Amino acid sequence: MNIHEYQAKQLLKTYGAPVAEGVAITSADEAAAAAAKLPGPLYVVKSQIHAGGRGKGKFKELGPDSKGGVRLAKSIDEVVANAKEMLGNTLVTKQTGPAGKQVNRLYIEDGADIARELYLSILVDRSAGGVAFVVSTEGGMDIEAVAEETPDKIVTVNIDPVAGVTDTDVAKIQQALALEEPAKGEMATLARQLYKAFTEKDMSLLEINPLIVMENGHIRVLDAKVSFDGNAMFRHPEVAELRDLTEEDAKEIEASKYDLAYVALDGTIGCMVNGAGLAMATMDIIKLYGEEPANFLDVGGGASKEKVTAAFKIITADPNVKGILVNIFGGIMRCDVIAEGVIAAVKEVGLKVPLVVRLEGTNVAQGKALLDGSGLAITSADDLDDAAQKIVAAVK
Image (cartoon, rainbow, N blue to C red; front, side):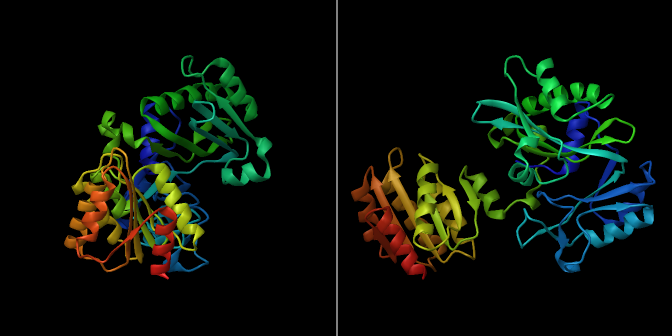
């Protein structure tokens, strides 16, 4: 689960992290009053969408020469003008794709005199089996570009889960960022504050890009991106309340109601599979035969008829879907239950595109018999290769 920058900063502030004063708004009419609450005379007007690269993005309605989604303003009048131009328009960045995202919120923040821009993130390092700090002196840039062009400037500091952030860990971070006082001493405190926030709130990513050293030598969290482990949200109702459904795909929201693992993609073949590994293999073989998957959808090992019906509805709700491939291996899951769910879904929502079903495993004979006797336009497949070829041919 992701949250907006302003929400992330409010959360980090409760742990003592140094953040600028700011006010979130949803209407241009609120811009002047929001800016008046800040010290000034420099303000920053920030689009609040769940995507990076906002500063370099362009507003679709304003053309390729438009200013980005993060703008400096030297007066309250400029803040208001920018707010009117940004709110309600579609910001396109590298991470949004060409469709972009509509800007429904802005964050008006107090400006800062920047001496240096640094990069700092905390994430789960799966290779080390623990949490790690990733830091670089090359802040303000895409960390992927830094990794590709100057990988030696990225330093990873793994944290012992028992000891937490030690003085040795802090020293490595301070050295990697080439910090001097007072920023050096402040980093010792900030590193522990951020680690505490990360672990206590079950975050999966905490990224600060940039973390700045100001002209006065102090550090400040200038931007903040925070993602949480969705499986842990039952422990954090106060965090779950920060979820902004307008930033999420409607189909993914619907899937979450039925505990379905669903991710919308850009292809034309909808997939319904049980098991993440089998789902990945199904997507790969669709690509092998020249088409693109429209989604990742794992119904899980013990899906009910109702769950399968819901999954089918979600797939067919995607206007880009030109064909559907159901690929089920019945281990815990029974093939006859899948067949009943598919038949019920087709009867309820109709079938306007080709549908290929491959079943294997527990009660496979009963499942195939149900499909064959349904009287519906369902194509059976003997194996995954056969299924992929049939659905690709049907779509083409």
